[in-house]
Image 1 (tube, helix red, strand yellow):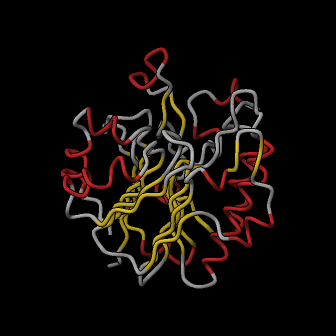
Image 2: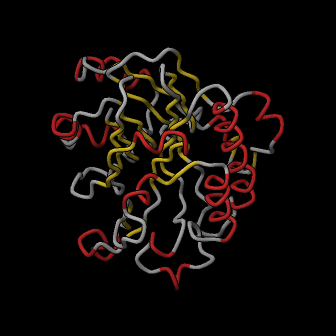
Length: 270
């Protein structure tokens, strides 16, 4: 089973560049979790169903048009697809701020299969002025609570754009970025909590100390060409699934977005 995750930063833009078809044709993901589609279902459903008939396609859009939003393309039809955080978790955390309600921004989708759940997440950005850092301190534990809730039913794999570099290995220039968005103590502690809950960072299973493995690059200063980047896109799997992992990779040569896809292969059939 090949699982890919990609923040496309506008799926219609990637498609118009002619870069989505060759990616799918070459990599043939069994499941593709997509973040930041920036699309409403009525803008994409018919066209993409025709373009990629081999995939069952599920879209979860933000209430605000052209913003955030996620999707799942899957060759195997899921048993169920769940959108958003469940009501009990929404009630337990303060997920609203001056920017809006994070649970209305199309940020979380879960597909259920026989062996496990696969979740995709587009974590809220803390903003340059850290004005959404307080929200992150609610969102991160809320999302983790949901993953732990699912884990009580069957194992969980979750992936997406977490908007945080976990350690100094995960960004090219850690020292000047300490305390800035994506590398604050608050955001990094949210990642620590996932590890403490027995979810593993799949790439670090295979590349525990490797540097220069980045998934996002600024548009400025030729950052991508020079590989001055950040690793903020991850595939996490529960510890109980670790022995099924065959590899975990990033794919920096896949163009079309300021992020590149990340993937895992697992010795399991959906």
